[in-house]
Image (cartoon, rainbow, N blue to C red; front, side, top):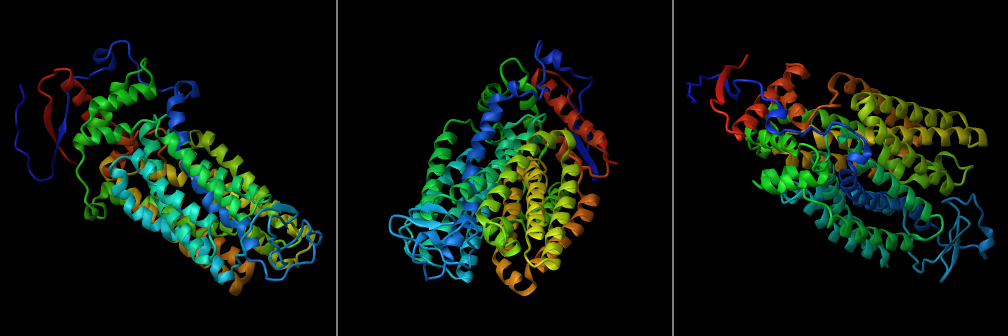
Length: 551
């Protein structure tokens, strides 16, 4: 029989069973899913890959300006015939758009527009996407509270309209409008996709599947860079619109997040989704009761609470730090203006093919993150990534400072750029979104992820918008030196601040930040106490409640 004891200030009411409850007693023959073999997680992988299609589409947006700007920045004069162009043409040399065909970097284009931009207009074109993403991230909390999957579906409309505006642009303001609208969509997706993946994936593969977010972005950047070698900016915009249709249709066929369903008091639907994802041979009740336990024991977070409650404020500070290092290390500026940056840093090399090589390495290394993040851990990958990024940037700065564009110095700088983006893509790039999806309490996840997304895209906007101004004042050497110094400071802070979350469930991570003075083991025990009690009560156990003094 349950007895009610008085609770004084400083005490916490916790559900405690009178005896240990074993899973075999509750669910005979069932077993929790612990094997990370892909064959056992194929439906979870499929759902994550669909989210990857939405970030792939976002990658085409981020990478669009790299192949498009050299053409849009062309001077008004044109050579007498297309044969004057060679494989080493640069942004200072004129490009020519002919009706029906033209030669750009030795490739055939079909642009029929005659749109030309100044450097200031180009900087706005590159950065308005990120400003729109700030707005999208601001409203994403409300959008994804209606459903993570619905948020991704809703993002398709502004993205499709934006691409169409860019493809049909006859002046720079239509381009601006299209970039801003697509940016709103990107802000929503970057909040919804990591949360959705973390909530459908089992803890044994959660880190790997969360890396699909960055892998999709990098694959999109590489694809549009490669296509940009052969087609013009209008063709790239048409391809971007096609990617929106593909990810919208694919998202219609994946289930809702089981965590969101539990938050909506739809436990039966959540059980069905877990059975679909994990398979009927495994104990989905264990995962389901973890979600219910977290919901029962959690509080409701207002925007004010997120900035006051330690269970949310501490992870917000950790993820915010990683986000600041991520963006202020210059990645967005370098990848947005990749072809232009490489021409300025290494004028002896074809900027288009160098950009293709750099973005291809991004794809390979971000694929490596999928396999390494759950084996090496988030913390080790972060620190190794930041260290190598700093070395790559310092090498580019040194090459720019001691050489005058000679072939030897140029190739060293190209290799350093490859090393830089590779380190970003295997480490801090994907790990940032892994942490966004797993560090925040379940009740605060939508609001906290929105805050991080706003911070992420605002910093990306500032870094991208100021690149041309910074480069004109300090040169490539000074710009890369500044970004490298951010990596150095970030490495020190990450070492002291960021904990390792590999192998821990979302409930354990939440308990760790709530009881941060304890070890992971104690946090895990506190979470398990509440979980086992709910399991016993669900099966008819009695005397399920007692109290203990909070130390």
